[in-house]
Length: 102
Image 1 (tube, rainbow, N blue to C red):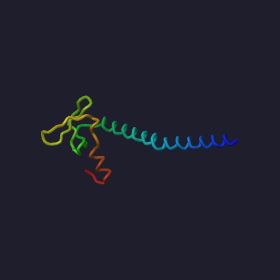
Image 2: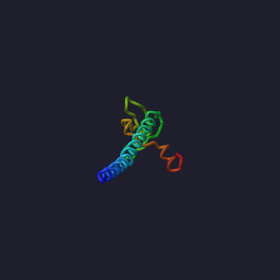
Image 3: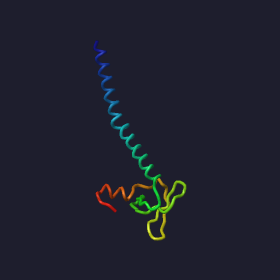
Image 4: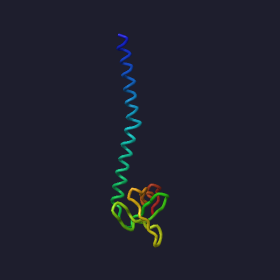
């Protein structure tokens, strides 16, 4: 009878470990994937004139599109071509989060 009790204890700890694995690894990964999909949808919906933030904190205006890249105008007669995946944020979205409007 004692072996049955010990086996039950082992199963309990295995169950605890599985629950820990789900809460620590699986759930955050799902939410990260959801955020990535939302960001990709926003990037695909960009239009000329939208303001974006690219790595380095550079704020620019979308000036055109090429395959899977966008042209970002950062100053008068200065345009950068960056991959769509390089967009890290949107100016209007940042202002809305801070409570201000631009």
